[in-house]
Image (cartoon, rainbow, N blue to C red; front, side, top):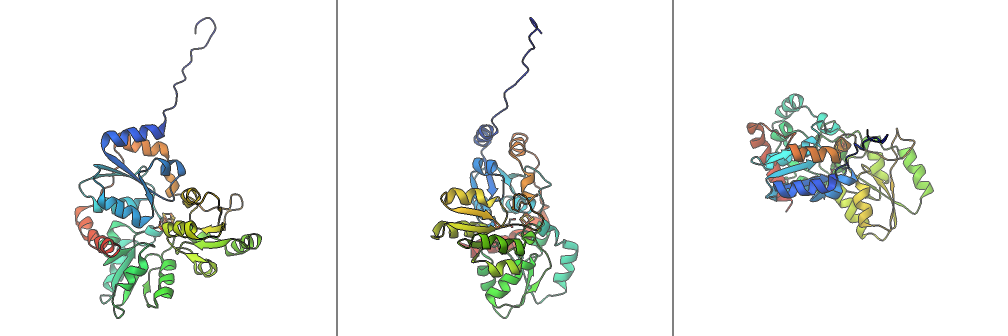
Length: 321
Ligand code: 13P
Ligand code: SF4
C-alpha cells in the first residue's frame, strides 16, 4: 500500500484465441473441430466439419500435432489414421452415449455368433468395436457403404438403432441392428415439435438420422450435419426447425445469415428449447489452449487394436472419395 492506495494486482486475461493461433503456428499443430463444438472453438479451428470430413481432414494433414475438438471416439479415429502423430483431446472425459452403448465384451461374442454377417459400424464407437468391424460408416456415407455390399450378404449394423432403421427403410436391406442410441437425438419431443411447427407452418423440419423414427417421419429432409448445412444453403426456404445438436446452428447461421433457424425442442427442455450434447460441450476454449500448450491429454490406442481398426476405416475412406 502506498499513500492509502491499494496496489493493482490485476493482470490482463490472456487472449485465448490469439494464444491458440500462436501455439498452432509454433508447434506445427492443426485444430480440427466438430460442428457441435462451442462457437469460440469453431472460430479458432483450422477445419470444422462432420465425422466424415474430420476423418478425411485427419487422413491428409501434415501437422505434427492434431488437437481434436470433439469427442473421444473421433479423436481415437484420428489417432488410428495418424499413429506417428501426437493427437490431443482437450478433455478426455468427452465421451458419447452411443459409443458407450456398444461394449466390446458383449459385441464381440454377438459378432462371433453371426459368422455369415458383415459388420458395418457407425463411426460413433470405440476403437475396439472398430477393430471388430468390416466397414465403418458415418451418417454422410452410410447409404453408399451399405449399397456397396452385395444384396445377398447379411449385415450387422451397430451401434445406432435409429440410423440403422432409417437405412433399412432407405435400402430395403434386412439388417441385424444393435440396440444403441444417442441421448441427445432421442430427447427430441414429438409433441413439442408438432406444437412448434403449428406456430411456424412456413418452416421446414430438418433432422439428423440419429433421431427417432417418429421425428424422421415428419422431417422434410434427413441428413448428416454437413448435409443439413448444405441443404439449408441451397434451398430457397427461409425458416427451418433443426433437429440435431444445437452447436450446428453456429456454422449454419454463418452460411445462411438471413434465414431463421429454430432448434427442435427436447423432452427435458422448457427454457431454451435446444438440445446440447454435454460430452461435446465438455471441451472449452481454455482447455483447448491448455492442451495445446502442455501437449496433454494425449490419445493412445493400443497398436494391435489400431492396426485392426484401420482396415474398416480405410475401406470407408476409399468408398467415400
Ligand atoms: P455427423 O456430424 O457425422 O453427422 O455426426 C453427428 C454425431 O453424431 C456426432 O456425434
Ligand atoms: Fe454421442 Fe450423441 Fe453426443 Fe454425438 S450428440 S457425441 S452421438 S452423445
